[in-house]
Image 1 (tube, helix red, strand yellow):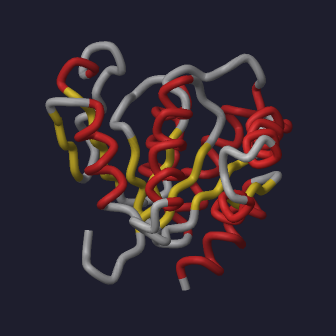
Image 2 (tube, rainbow, N blue to C red; image 1 turned 120 degrees about the vertical axis):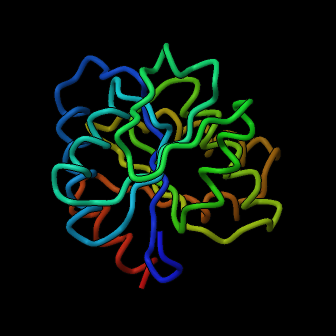
Length: 185
């Protein structure tokens, strides 16, 4: 990816989830990234929401940069037809390479792995290690329990209220697009 091209790291599930809206928004996110000329940085899987985001980005002419640890190549069906395909030794290295190659972070619905990725970049932001935007796509109110947990953590004195300002929650892909445009301009 060129030095001037912006890229967005998308953390999301390696499964599709139970609600059809999750897949709909994953596809719409990939298309939206490509239509804006933003590259996709993601976990290089060809399964679940990961695969849907990547395929939609590709089908709309977008750039794709995938990063996958060697132990997940078979399990997540490493998508080798990407513009860039990086195999790492560890999960930590995967997260670091994804983060370093993106200008913004977006969290779509996902499970423990997506939460691990989210909390790592949030912690780095809290520690002033970066200032990249972190955006939750709250499809069908999926992230409401996470937002409530963040409120609880602050209310119980385990984080300063400023941590909530590091996270932007949007209800749909058009709002995600507008938020990214403002952040990446």
